[in-house]
Image (cartoon, rainbow, N blue to C red):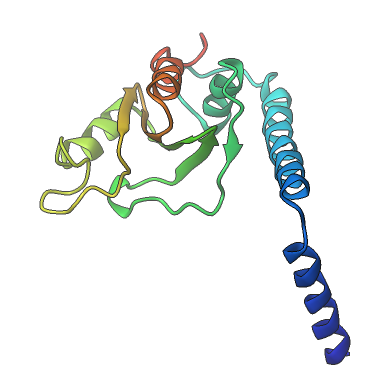
Length: 167
C-alpha cells in the first residue's frame, strides 16, 4: 500500500514538473475562475438576508463582488492578534484585503486607537503590512488594502468607503 502511495505521488510530481507553461497558465486560470465563482455564489445566496446597516462578512463580500472586483477568499490568513477580531481576507487581482469587522464603530475605534498611525501596528512594532497599502475605516469595518496598482487600491478603497447597503 505504501509503495503504491509513493508511486502515485512520484507520478503526480512528474506530471506537474512536465506541465507546459501554457498548460500551467490554463490550470491556474481555471482554478482562479472556480474561486471567484464560488465567492459570487456565496454572495448570491446571502442577498435575501436583510442588512443591519453594519458590516458583516456577507456584506463585505457582496460589496466587493458588486464593485466588479472578483474577490477570492484567502482562508489561510491569520488575524493580527492586536486587531482583536477575526480577519476576512481576500485577493483581488494583484491586491489583497485584510478586513476586520467589529461589533460596532466604537469597538473599531478603540482597537485602532491603540495602533501607531504610521505602521498600523502596536507602538514600537514594525508594520506587518506590505507596501504600498491603504487603510479604509467605515462604521464597524477596518480594511487594509495591500499591493496592486494605484487604480486597484483606489477601486477597493472606494467600494469599502461607500459603506453597506441601506438597512
